[in-house]
Image 1: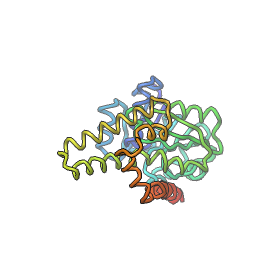
Image 2 (image 1 turned 90 degrees about the vertical axis):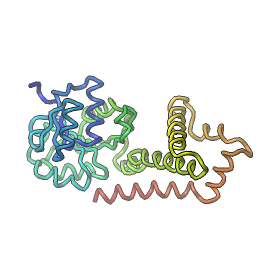
Image 3 (image 1 turned 30 degrees about the horizontal axis):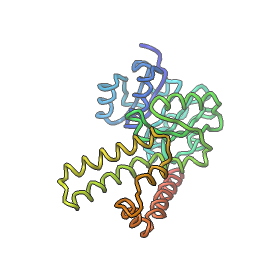
Image 4 (image 1 turned 180 degrees about the horizontal axis):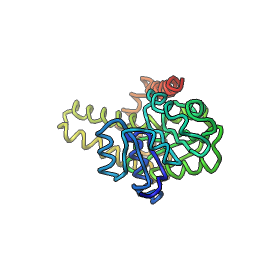
Length: 269
C-alpha cells in the first residue's frame, strides 16, 4: 500500500469532484487517497468509479492522511468532527468545504494547533469547471493555503479572499449553479407554455444556456457587454428584459443572493 497523501471525511459529490481533479492532474493516485462515508452507496460509487479506498469509519482517514478534506453537510460537522478531535494536531492540514463553518469553529472542534483552510467550491468541479475561494485559519501557513489552492485548482479556478467574505462567496458561487439551472428550467417551461413540445423546449433551453456560458467564458467580454450585443433596440430581447426590469427583477435577485449569504451565516452559528 502506498502512503496516504489525501483523505476525505465525506464521500459526496464535492469530495468526488475534488478527487477526480486531483487524480486527473496527477497530484495523487487513487491508492494514495482514502475516504470515509456512512452511506454504502457513496462508498461503492467512490471505489468503483475512482478506485479510491473508502471506509465506513472516519478515524482511519485522519490517522493516515496528512491532508484531510472535510466534505460533510454543515449540520453534520460537529457530529462528524468532534469525536476525531484528538487525532488532529499541528501536523495535520484540514481543508473544510462546509458552507458557513468558520476556521475558528473548526479549530475549536479539533485538536489545538491544527492547520485549517476554509474553502467554498461549487458543483461544476465535477466537470473540471468549478469555482472556489479559500482563506486560511489561525495556524495555516501561506504554504498550506497554496496547497489547498493547488488541490482545488485541479478541478477549477481558485481565488483567495478574507474570511469575512466567504459567506458572500457561498451565496454567489457556491449556490450560483442552482440559480443558473433554475433559469434554464424556467426557460424550458416558458417554451412549453408558448406551444413547443417539452423535449424541444428543454433542448433549446439547455443548449442556449450552454452556448451562452461558453461565450461568456471564452470571449473575454463582460456579461453586460454581451447582453447589450443581443439586445437590439425595439427588439424581442429588449421587450423581455424591459418587462423584467419594470417588475424589479434585478433587486429581487440581489435580495435572493443576500438571503443565501445570510443563511450561510446562520449555518456558521
